[in-house]
Image 1 (tube, helix red, strand yellow):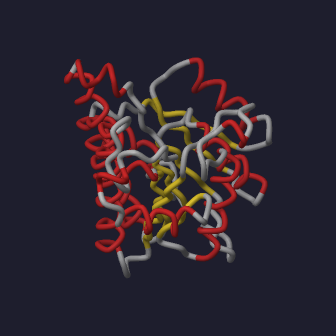
Image 2: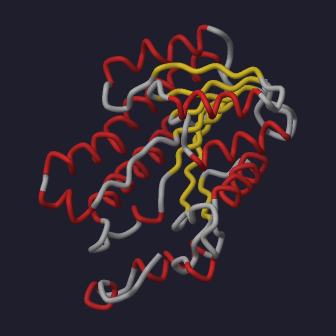
Amino acid sequence: MQDASGLPRSILVLGGTSGIALATVHRLIARGARTVWLAGRPSPALERAAESLRSLGTDVHTVAFDALDPESHPTALGKVFAEGDIDLALLAFGVLGDQAHDEREPLRAVEVAATNYTGAVSAGLVTAAALQGQGHGSLVVLSSIAGERARRDDFIYGSSKAGLDVFAQGLGDALYGTGVRVMVVRPGFVRARGVRRADAPPLSTTPEEVATAVELGLRRGSETVWVPGTLRAASAFLRHLPRAVFRRLPLF
């Protein structure tokens, strides 16, 4: 069970090679998490992630999981919950795609949407049902500022995140009062390791900063977390700009 501060002892990561997810798990291990399941496509990267966490003295397992195969989700995730309760499920998988290329190849655009939205709907519902069955737990969903408003250079990715965000909010309302809660995390542009803040878009962030915000959100029982926090006000302002003005801005 999670401790009195609201932090988990057992974690399931859907998208086991996600940099943001792994930064979050590292932080939560330092706060007392002891069991971690990494769900993802079998790969050397998934095994490296597992070994890295094991080096911290954590009990780590991997499970084969494919966002693009919803029919397999009940079986794959059922294996995890059959081994014991999960305090925190972190839905962290997704693909950015290549906007220019995907516009010319609609099937690639569909794959982005299927991964980021359809796969997340399936995995989110399966996970939520399992958490509800055990009577407790949190589902943290990694959304994005890209889902707040369509932009010319990433509207395929952004539309999938917009759908995911609305789904997660509705799921949280559906689970209200059941002992299970949903927290939506909306980061700005996440800088890769080694990229300086000065060289990144405004209001950018890092995996470690997102991890810190997730921990704080869990402690507070938050439903929505923006990273950085100033993104909330900026988004509210930008949401109401006329489209003719908005489309000319170099954002995020």
